[in-house]
Image 1 (cartoon, one colour):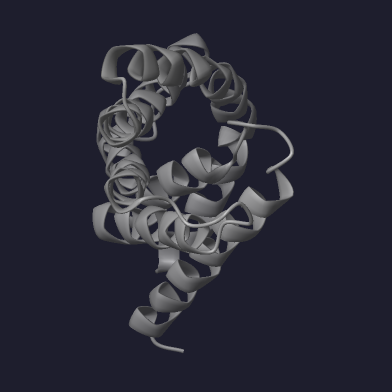
Image 2 (cartoon, rainbow, N blue to C red):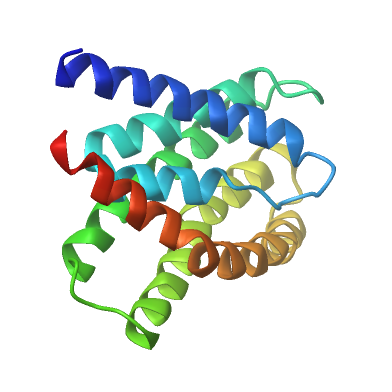
Length: 174
């Protein structure tokens, strides 16, 4: 199989994984592995595959959500936000390289988790407050609710990054 076909296959599979895991975690509001998957894809395969996986996976979830599709401004913010998590994964790899280990890497992963959460929830909360109104109470309520996701991401990123690192080593031949 050519490298291009392998990469397209990985993009499709991981976008589908974001959708499936979003279904699986739908009973736990704002706890989702989608952030970490998009981030890891950017770390492993680069900026465009990472952004594509995040955007496609979130588009699937936003469009085929069991509670109904999101309103267009909110959907655009969600798709763009998760796509940017792939970009952050790529930037993280350029900063981290392969040399940092221990507490420095953990601190950088915590920063990455914070940034992924903010890049997603700030635009989503603004779009949601703009559509549903009243703006300020809705915005502050949405941002407060996103703290659940922040705590989850602060746990998920450092705990699962070893898997990302291992896949990255295996994919070195790509």
